[in-house]
Length: 332
Image 1 (cartoon, helix red, strand yellow):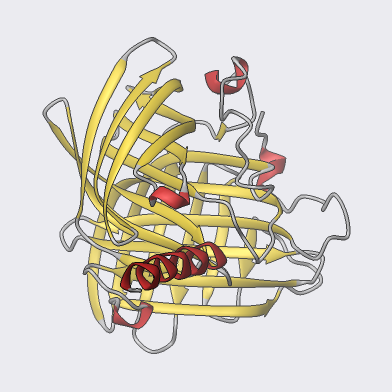
Image 2 (cartoon, rainbow, N blue to C red):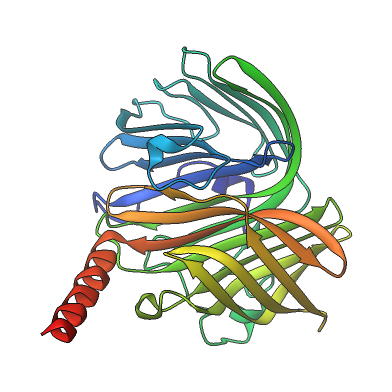
């Protein structure tokens, strides 16, 4: 069960330097099809963090081709760091108005790009390890112990309303959207071999879905295996008890995704998503999130949400060289 105390830094379980605690505020500007992410990862045992501020409305192959990208590492946390109220040298500030439920987030790079929004939750935090919330965990179903290696030893997701403005190189764009943020803590190696598809679809304040899937890198993640997730329906949260998915990719990016989800009330939800954008997000060294903003269809409704498909860089390198060896063998 997630409590207000979980909004603060957790005491590391060891002196492991890879212990990490993260926040990801992902949102979008509907009128522009602009996908935005404000991410922080703090390594409390080292006293430093990293932050990425990324905005993209196109299909790009490199971070600098996006509408905006700022990635900074080794940001000092300082001796009195407070995860509920902090300001970083890169221009980002985050303040919890109500821990885990309401936040004000501001960013300014001092060169004409800014982000200002208020986040207000539509539901309690969803603990992926709590059997009272997650039917997969309660049933000890296959995949219910998924923790993305150990990075998600502690983790919750939550859907809410993001409202504010983006100032992109001096041009203001007000926005309001329904989206999902997350918070996690645990050892997180920089050499990361675990795959994950973290995705969501938002149709209105009354209807949204969020799910985490595992997949096989060797098949480029064509088949998705449900590990955790929920449906937010008219103010009630229904954990997912079963589900499957299939992804058609362009390279490593999801181009089309079909999902079949079964919630705790035995209702089946079928969704189809199609990519609008593409962006390679280096969340931290040695991992790439192949991120797209998708347009989703479900029961005659249209919604939007992000698909983040994560691969370790070493995994990608192994796959690339295995393909190269196969091609070389065929040529001989």
